[in-house]
Image 1: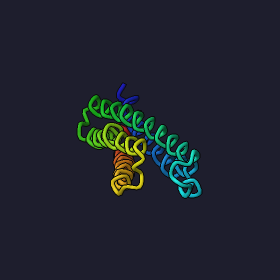
Image 2: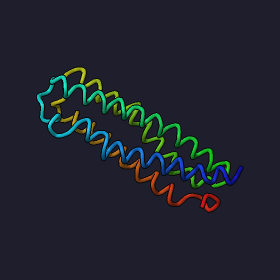
Image 3: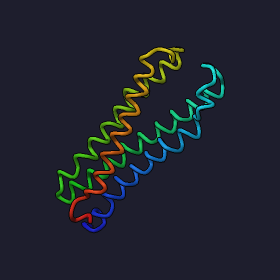
Amino acid sequence: MTSLLSRLYPLFCGGLCGAQLFFAAVAAQVVFPREVAALPRGDPRRSLAADLVGAMLARLDAATIALSALAILCAVLLSQRRAALLPLLAGLCAAASAGLVTPRIHAMREAGQTALPRFGLLHAASSCLLLAEMAMLCVAAVRAPESAR
């Protein structure tokens, strides 16, 4: 059982980090390229791209919350409670994104307030949360508990 848990912890952390990197570097860029971002606000293609990126982020946040919880469980069961800290913080960042930041972004889009500075700040906050999650999960995967190496 210990062997399985010690293999799952870095798999959960590293897999999430990879998924987040793919989302930020590939998926969001393909769905919402500069050409689409340059379209006028309200253009159906721009709205569709924003909806798709938002839907992908919602699923990524849900996966981060769930798999971070599993990584925490692995660390606790391995008696490596300190190793649970980074996945816990990453999960909290994902929860903040899913519960606070993303709904506000969506509400501002629905209200047609995308030109306001607050909209840009919320997007920056979302990006910072994702970057923080990636960094924490990468470090967690690399510094997996001794029994996980």
